[in-house]
Image (cartoon, rainbow, N blue to C red; front, top):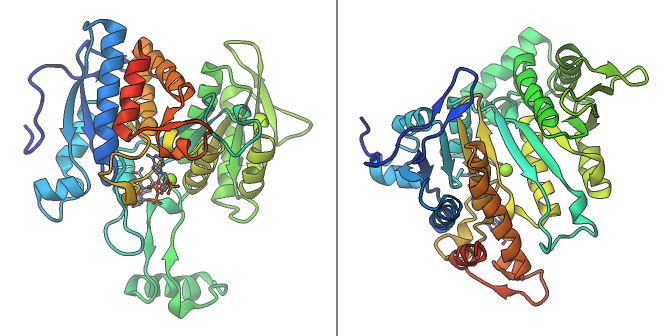
Length: 418
Ligand SMILES: NC(=O)C1=CN([C@@H]2O[C@H](COP(=O)(O)OP(=O)(O)OC[C@H]3O[C@@H](n4cnc5c(N)ncnc54)[C@H](OP(=O)(O)O)[C@@H]3O)[C@@H](O)[C@H]2O)C=CC1
Ligand SMILES: O=C(O)CCC(=O)C(=O)O
Ligand SMILES: [Mg+2]
């Protein structure tokens, strides 16, 4: 059925029920993309650590059949020089429902567009879910890093990040600028002859489905608030639209009521009876608030580009992107991936922290209902960090630490599983 993907002889597909719950066999086939740059270092370590946790948790009754699929530089070596994202990779991610990927390179300026964005758009993985929590012992620039405990819902299918843009002085840019000036009466393009142009689509539907997921998450996980983060004072109909549609959804679908005349509103969590407050924050102010008063924020719903910035900023507060996990999700398909990129200067050196991809796999196991194995990964990560045998990123900031390699950290985690 596939040209280059080898389907494992053993194992079965995860399937999705009409209510989007999963049927997970005891030996699911999980597609994975190794990734560019440090992908060659972290992906094998992630697989080894996950296999150890699953074996330990289920004593051989469950195991993962890994199936390699291709994107990025490795794909061009296998499928041909121009094939960065083969269609069979997209088919496999969709058909096998749950997958995991290493980072993929996107050149700045010219060259290919982001394969990460393409995967999210092609499969309509509209939620980028990035939890940010503190692990005891991790070096952090904050005095009280444990107060940072947030879950980011980043809109993943729209916004300026979608890459609808035309280079300065190209025919496309000229046409768009002409249209704006001549037909729309736009007079505010400061240097029309040399402007590149980008388009920022933000829709009510796109906002509603993202904010709905964020609020539902707050209900399911007994969280106190959902904050809509936007720059709606400046970009009124895109970022401002996101804020207004988000509030409207809370009132309309969750029965929220205005607090002191609004726009903040709240409703009682139907599962716990506790209040959930829906509030908003302008993105620049938010970036200082998360440093100064992180405890006031819990679930964050935001647009694509803001979410990209906020993910790395929040990751830094709890020790850096070496341990920042994530997932890209639609209602049925989920693809897990680290928040960080390919860190090319460290590629192939067995050096970087595999923690981010391992914690992404932890989210994956939890999503599959393999809670015991997921819990084991968290416990062994905690123990490994407490033992101070850590990769360079933590070792350089920790007193008395022993620096270990990428694969060495994997070994420490496996040892810590007992
Ligand atoms: N989802 C994806 O696949 C993503 C892909 N990218 C792509 O990755 C490429 C490189 O992007 P860049 O901006 O350099 O960002 P990166 O996230 O790759 O690296 C930035 C810095 O973060 C730290 N870092 C990254 N990974 C780790 C790790 N595993 N362990 C410890 N520290 C780590 C390093 O810091 P230090 O130098 O201090 O050691 C590194 O120099 C680009 O092509 C970009 O487009 C970027 C983000 C996400
Ligand atoms: O696609 C890329 O190259 C960057 C993606 C990114 O920064 C992210 O997903 O956070
Ligand atoms: Mg990013």
